[in-house]
Image 1: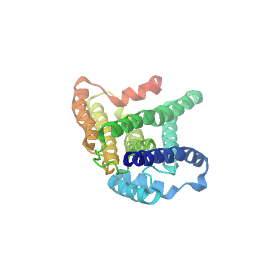
Image 2: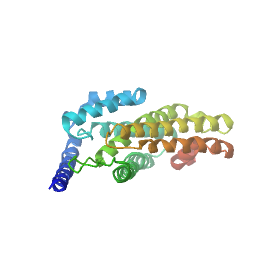
Image 3: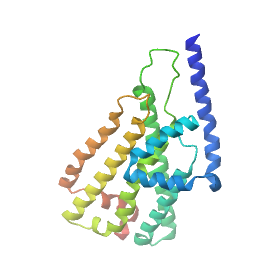
Image 4: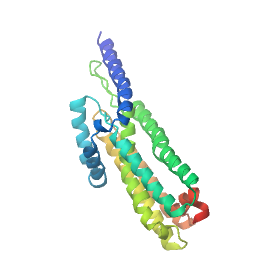
Length: 252
């Protein structure tokens, strides 16, 4: 009977997770139900002390019995800030309102939402398939990573990278897209820091889950970034010029 009970608890947990999505989506259009102040607190600490944010994730699990946020405020505000930053780039480098609209929509969809959904799904599959600790007793309640939590971790990781590679990058972009070794070096260093910090915060998000093991696998991409950066510098690849050319090639 014990395995049956365990499966029952697991299916109940899955059912509770599935019922969470409609409520989450409904709250996207209800600003009065969003905790805006707490969202900005999280954003600030993700840039300065990301471990503090994930300590609060533990408290959320204890009070709400789920790891994922039930408040879409973080995604909504992050999307708005990304749209504003993209509009600033369009104002500086674009001269067509139609093209600017296309750029804003494509950045929101591909840089944050679609890419985030793909990365979150990959991490969700990886953690649930290979990184969960084996529980020898069948009476132990099975725990799994929620997909929405994996997407939360992506959004948490994206925000500090957004500050570096969209906001700070914007103010120094005239230097970074110029020709020469100094722009090449600075651009690669900035992207190296941004990408490394993304993967570090991503690691923290899964390392805080007590039922996962070997979460250091999420730090491995940082090694790849450190290997690729000097190679990019040697071959003269400027990531700032590359990504800016994707949208504003005629105006650089």
